[in-house]
Amino acid sequence: FSTENWKRPKKEVDYLMRLPEEFLGTFLPELIEENVQVRVIGQQDRLPTHTRRAMEKAMEDTKENTGLILNFALNYGSRDEIVSAVQHMVKDSEEGKIRVEDVSEEMLSSYLMTSSLPDPELLIRTSGELRISNFMLWQIAYSEFWFTDVYWPDFTEEHLLNAITDFQHRGRRFGGV
Image 1 (spheres, rainbow, N blue to C red):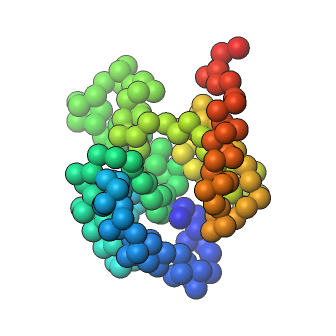
Image 2 (spheres, one colour):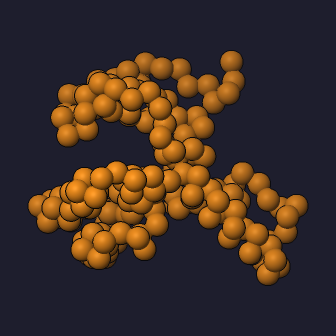
């Protein structure tokens, strides 16, 4: 759910805000059993209380898990994330915690909401859309993209395996030849 999705009709937003709670109500025990850690990126302060509570409970209940990480992007927008990171850097500079001449890609990355995560290697875009939609603009600089007309609710394990197989046959150059 992006920062821009609040512009959608209220009925749709209300429905979307119930989905994390319903998903976690069903699958949290399995996530715990499978050693999955739940994390959230995005500005959580605007989320409805019931959504925020469900996410907080899931993060608390899985914080010690060391397996896969399941990231929820809720009220997340990449431009918002970058602006927030720069604001924090400026504040830290004014307080003498960092020096302007030390600013680097690595430093900026450390101020992002995703600082504890590796950059995505593969971005799967569902629903036939051929745009990034303000998602992880900084982090996907060298990600491979895989597009499908299948809508997210209909995306199956077979689709995922197709994306991974295609990804495995690509030659990643990270800007080189």
